[in-house]
Image (cartoon, rainbow, N blue to C red; front, side, top):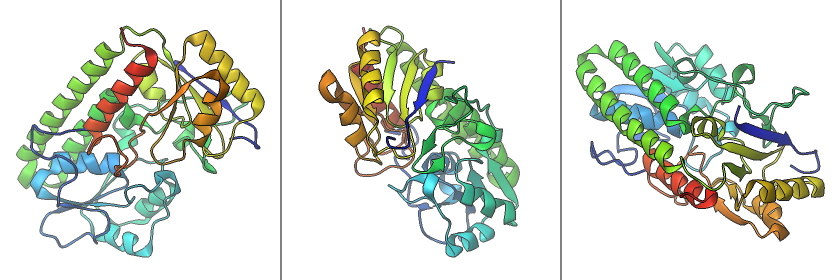
Length: 319
C-alpha cells in the first residue's frame, strides 16, 4: 500500500468542452425539491455524484444535490425538506459509508432506483494503524463502511468504473433515453481515460514520490500513480499538530525530498503552515473535490483534477 498515515494525539489534530456541459447546468439544483419536473429526477448526495448524474443524464435529468457548495460532506445532516424531495425522486445516487444521514434516509426512502457508487468499483482500506484506529475528520469517522476509504472519485480509473455503472442504472431506470445515456457515459469515460493518462505520464518521473496533506483523501490517487501520501490525520484538520509530529514530518520532508505541505479548499491552511514552519516548506492546495466553490481552481471535476496534477508536479519536481 502506498499510503502512510499517522494519527495525531487529541491535543493536535475541471473544463468540460466535448459536450458543452461545463459545470453543473441549469438542470441541477442544490436546493429545489425533486419530483414532478417532467424529467428523470435524480438526487445526488454530494458534488462528485452530482457531476456524474449531470454528465451522464444530460438534458434528460433534473439533479438535486443534498450537499451545498462549500459544505463539508462528512458533516451533512439532511433536512425534512430534503427527505421529502428524496422520496419524490426517480433515483438517488450516493456513496454509502461517506454520509451517515444520507445512508439512513436512502434506506428508509421508497425511491425506486438506489445507486450506491461504492458497489460500482472496489474500495480498500487506507491508513489504518496497527492498533486499529482509523483516521478521523472533524470529529467524524473518516473511513467509509467497514473501514474502507470512500474517496474513490479522486482516482480517475475508479471514477470511470462508477460512471459506467451509473450509466447502466440510468439506462435501466429510464429506457426511453437509454441511447443518450450510453453515449454520454462513453464521452465522460473517454475524458476520464485521458485524465488518467495525463496523471500517469505527468507523474512518472519526479524527484520525490512523497507528498504531505492535511486531509487524508488521496490514498487511491497515490496508489494509482506510485506515490506515497503522508497525511496529518486527526480529529480536527484545523487544530495544530504536536511538536513531536511536526518534527517527524519535517524529518520525513528532508529524507524524502518533500517541498510542499498541501491543504484543502474547505478548511484553513493553519495546520499546513504549522507543519511547513521552520523547515522552509511551501504550502499549496490539493483539492479533494468534495464541492466546487469560488475558491476552487476550476469550475468542474476535470478542471480541478488537472489543477491537482499541476500542483503535484510542482511539489514533487516533475522531470
